[in-house]
Amino acid sequence: MKYSPHDARPGTVYLIGAGPGDPGLLTLRGAHLLGMADVVVYDNLVAIEILEMAPPQAERIYAGKQRGDHSVPQDELNLLLVRLARQNRCVIRLKGGDPYIFGRGGEEAQTLVAHGIPFEVVPGITAASGVAAYAGIPLTHRDHAHAVTFVTGHLQDGTMDLDWPALARSGQTVVIYMGLTGINVLCEKLIEHGLPAHWPAAIVQQGTRSSQRTVTGTLATLPERARAAGLKAPTLIIVGRVAGLQPDLAWFPESA
Image (cartoon, rainbow, N blue to C red; front, side, top):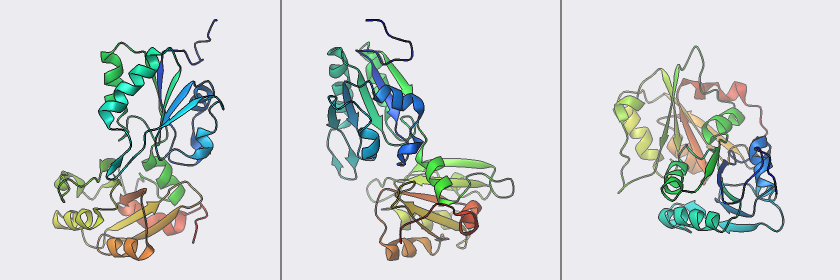
């Protein structure tokens, strides 16, 4: 059988970014390859509507990761992709957001290279850009932010090991992935390292989905407002003057 260079090939792993949630944000390339899958290894943040784009006969393997609950340890997952590809199957590794932005796609790609498995990376809209846009927060703005920094907010032993002086600079937007659990520490540290307590900040739950909720405030008020709103993961935190634009630029209808 002959294959178009644009078609999925057996024995190949495709690391595909599914985007931040809204199925309409999946790329055309991602949808095309997904439609030819023999097996789909997917994360918990992948929308069910996207998963349903795979052929009905395609095997589906859940490999989601949530705080304290990894269904498949990363090292085992890396080798699982190798084994599936060696079965001469078209393997789709479907990730929320973008594979190379806090998606561990780099680790998976390294394992594939080490075992001689061909692969392709299909970028996805990462949560920072997709969620911020749906929340009404431009990540850059000539009057407010000339740079953007992405960081992960995973706590390690009760602390956040981040470069606080670099993050507490006024001319940028800081986007924190997976930061809900450590939101108190995050806000306290940014104030401690120089940002004013009244610095604008926002947190978005389930961004780009029908269940999206956005809470705005300041570094001083955001932790309590997030608690009062009962927000739950997945969330994205955005810190910077651009967060103050949200009330005027919000366009996406949110759940109450």
